Figure 1: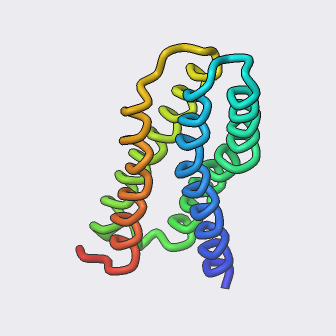
Figure 2: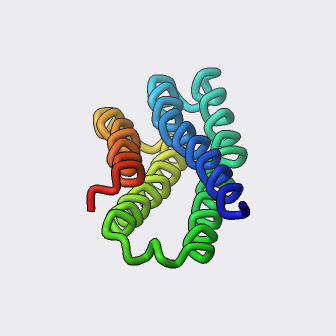
Length: 141
């Protein structure tokens, strides 16, 4: 029964983390459309900071803690090929999280950042999530 509770909360925090990863680049794109000191810039800076502190950081931490807990509770999963692929993609997603945060801090400082690159990267968490969900549900290998 404990395993199912941990799994449920793992999924809740995956959803929260993904929501944050999908909205953060949008906030930053809005911020790029204004200059430091302008109301939109400062509003998006404040909103993205709250998003990081309230959703993204706790989300990524709890996803990893609960995911590792699931593996401790069910170590047999480690022999599954699909899980190895999932873990690799979650590592990529975690790296993308760090990159988004670093990029956001550059934008907050008023440094030049490519809006085109940010728009393209904004889609990557969603694509990774699709593949991860398929791996977990279908378990193709």
